[in-house]
Length: 173
Image (cartoon, rainbow, N blue to C red; front, side):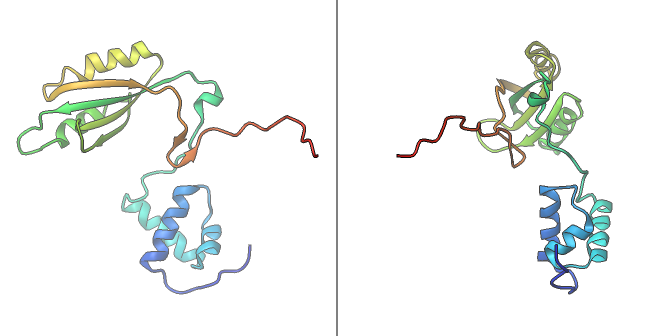
């Protein structure tokens, strides 16, 4: 890789570029990011530390194809309808649900349900019992719908399948 193109003070746009690069590949070094953005390596390091301290960078994560690894975990999408609590709306129940270790994702969404959950379990039965015993009995929950995930094609921006190579012989006329 070549030398940095630009050693100007970082701007909001270039800092966003740093975050986007880290989001795509959290293993990039400050030097690699500096080379791609034109910022100095020190500015990149300083910015990353600041973003970590402010909680904007929450953590660094790998995207694992567990199915390919041989893990048979079961994932389910749970749609949850709620009666929001007075003065706290959906936040209190969403916070409570988010604390269950089985809950991978908890989002407030628009549409015909309020919370969109992604649940991980070892078996379909374990996920079903988790919903029946932990989520459905909550006083704010009025309805749940469970959809078991059969296959993940794209996860957090990453395509999860590989094209099969065509093993047929090429025939030229």
